[in-house]
Image (cartoon, rainbow, N blue to C red; front, side, top):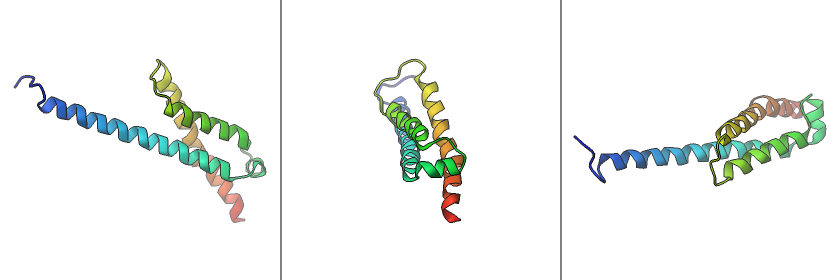
Length: 105
């Protein structure tokens, strides 16, 4: 079967588009969640947990959200976005539990 305009090929591109939107939304939600969590703790909590200060994490995560929302795809932006996603994941996996642990004591 060959290419049929408006046939199954269009369905594949539609599904691919929806998957792309879902991945974009998921990454944005992760970054926004990390940013909001970083703003909830005091700078003293960061220092007590022996992590970088609040300003550093807040700026990293705010830049991650801002770059995620930029409407263009410049060459190399994928690597920047993945690096900032790693920063958000490090915050959520390492820094946030350490800060939450301080409140429980």
